[in-house]
Image (tube, rainbow, N blue to C red; front, top):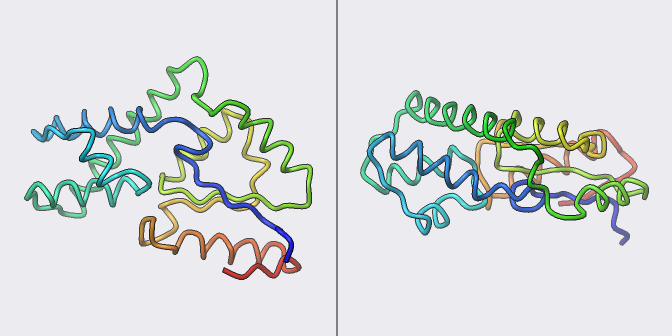
Amino acid sequence: MALRAILFDFNGIIINDEPIHERLLQQILLEENLNIESIELQAFCLGRSDRACLENLLEARGRIVTETYLNQLIERKAKSYQAELEALPELPLYPDTKAFIRRLSETELKLGIVSGAIRSEVELILQRAELKRYFSVIVTSDEVATSKPEPEGYLLAVQLLNETYPDLNLKP
């Protein structure tokens, strides 16, 4: 069976922004009178959506988490993240990422992204890095109910690729 598509994670794979996320989460939670250590953030947040991260962290600390409160925290972090990225003279992309993605796009492979980040963050970075056009499918935490490591995002990406390119006939 030949390789027909590649699905990339985003944060920590295409862009090296984990330190930015960690700092912003610590800042937002400190404003909520919670001092969170890096080890806790890694345990509860690494590879997960902001929603899953914040919900799990707050519940572990005995906080009552309403949907409204959670949405407010996520929105504050998203605005801070966007402002931080816009202030950077250069995005912290991993070395050779752009060249690698461009080379892959010259093949028959279809490229997609499956990310725990919110769509606005992914779109902002892809547009600024001039990479968006290379990805046929982008699935973010906005489109799925469960966070990684659950497979929902990957299954949706496979479904969308099959709908867009029926000849791929991808199987999860």
